[in-house]
Length: 172
Image (tube, rainbow, N blue to C red; front, side):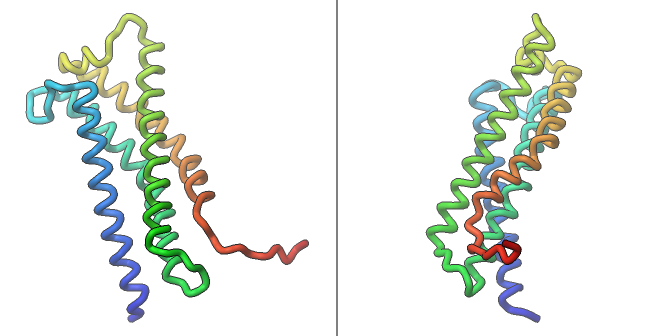
């Protein structure tokens, strides 16, 4: 058994759980305060619950693309070759999460604007507040589809920011 690898695995698991719970909690609170102040998932509004689940799934998909870059930084810091300090890990992690959160907001806003443009004369938020499950499902499906399409690009952007050690190009 490799103690260093085991320690790294526990760090990655703890980091993934803490970061994802924190970001999903913040996302849910922002969603609830910004759009649905009087609604709750405890009430009989199934449309709000479906919509909230879609937002949480969208943010989770984006986080799933960011967490590996953060854990790569932890791995790099544990290797003797690269001198990445704990403060640098926190700074880069914060940057990655901020970028991911911005993209989550951008994707969610884009879906709302797209859906509003496609359905002129329909107020989607009012429909969801009035428990219109059909509107909620269509908005949520659109949100998840766009998130799935954009996730690889977000992952590429984040991984490009990881401070990998410099390597030489032996082909030149």
